[in-house]
Length: 380
Ligand SMILES: *Cc1c(COP(=O)(O)O)cnc(C)c1O
Image 1 (cartoon, rainbow, N blue to C red):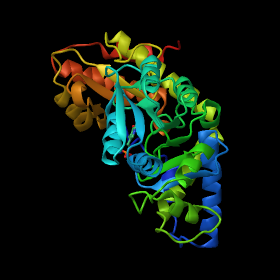
Image 2 (spheres, protein in one colour):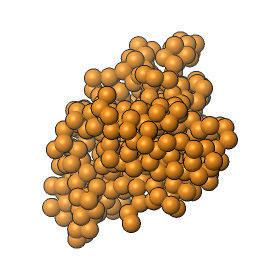
Image 3 (tube, rainbow, N blue to C red):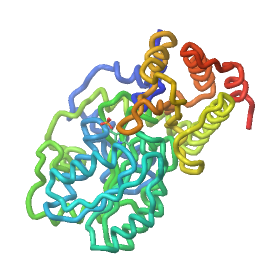
Image 4 (cartoon, rainbow, N blue to C red):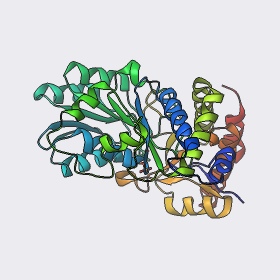
């Protein structure tokens, strides 16, 4: 039985993507592959809603995209303000510290969106070259106001760097409209392509900053000026592109664009609303406040007496459904349910609610599975 991957990623791979991955491998400088590279870059611009020429997939998972942006943009001693409202902002702060940046973190309680006022205070206090934030914080399910944060960066003369790993193709990501200077994503969340590539995009201000670097970035593999010579018109060898993963990304992006991004966002929102109704009927709620909840990642607060690891184990072992554990301070207190990409359908929500109710009952906390399912399938 195929497992239903309702965790924080990977989500189930779309069948059309699996087919594409199995196509015969060709050379990374084959003219047919070069044509595919052009199409991939065009599709990425559509997903990011940008005209940025530099919109490419980095070879590596989402974290490789984060690392690409930071190693190329940051120079030692530069001040960067990093909003931390969960694991991934914390990861960026760790990385920036390793690069010798002067890091100021603006921390929020977990489950809350990034507070623009707190960010503005940090930018006011002392000029910063960069602002980093996570659009969709997968560790807590909180959505932050990217347009407002990007605007603040611009007002204060800082470059705006955004993590949109979980939001891309599940929620509007408007790189050009918001004025985001550099962003990165991943393939295994709402794109429903296996983990292995990290789409990134860089605008003119970010490229100018890189061109003014004093020294080469401290990573050879992720040095954008070299990577760009392969993806750009020169087509010169840097490292071998992961050919079959790029077939998969192309197929996943084609599915998203054929569906239409706005329709895809609606589908995610509808699945989320069905889940929320079902959870409320079971007497449960989501961690982030209403209005700041991600559609594609739902952190469900568990009653104190629930044995969270046992619950997840039973969901997977008995029902074939994977969900995510709470991370850090949320360990044992929440489970994280991803309804991403190919999986974002009410049918999967209903399957989850029925199995979840059975697992709660199994722990001596009887709930009526019918109530959750009935609420989920009732149109709002
Ligand atoms: C998953 C994720 C990452 C890291 O991606 P990997 O593919 O695990 O390297 C970074 N940021 C966010 C918000 C994520 O959800």
